[in-house]
Image (tube, rainbow, N blue to C red; front, top):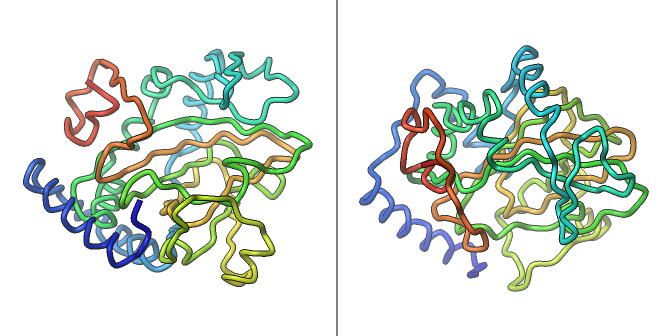
Length: 276
């Protein structure tokens, strides 16, 4: 993938023009325009923006109640499945299946909320595609970070933004998301790699490395072309909800949209990879 920022901007501009021809323009929600504009400015400057509370305590109770008996699948080649209460001691990360994510209360409604779609539209430059949606547990293990739990960049599309919501309280030791502010504007190497903490401190300054803690229900947006990681939990597991909005589908994914009652309530273009 092209890494020079000027070339990437030119490609993004052309792709967004094609999307507008195909799908039309996405309406910007005026009721949340001030908050969306503020978040969009922070995203463009820093690659990161706090979004405040996105789920109420009552909604969180309903989400956890629904997920309580659902199976998890290990993230990685072994692919073990298990209920949360029977998580293996060596488990690092595990995901709920797409069907359970879509059926979980409040998830699709938030992904398609006017505020988040407006933010994605402003940042990307055209009507967004919901190209990923997931719920993942990260478990405490006595092991160094690797893969997603080491500093890295994502290369999912020419421009994209992810929205994360903590569904458990996240303090230091609970696997906070860590982001290097401003790194989304720096060219990436042709071959993506991981980064060490000391290397990033020298390159960007320790003050630019932000560890995101907060209560369950808190959300934030990040351009994960910038350097980031999820820390390995050491005290309590973390449950994280993630939405990805992009210009194009992610070439590495194999999409199998699922039929769901009520899908017609959501924009068919935005949700075409997930819902039918």
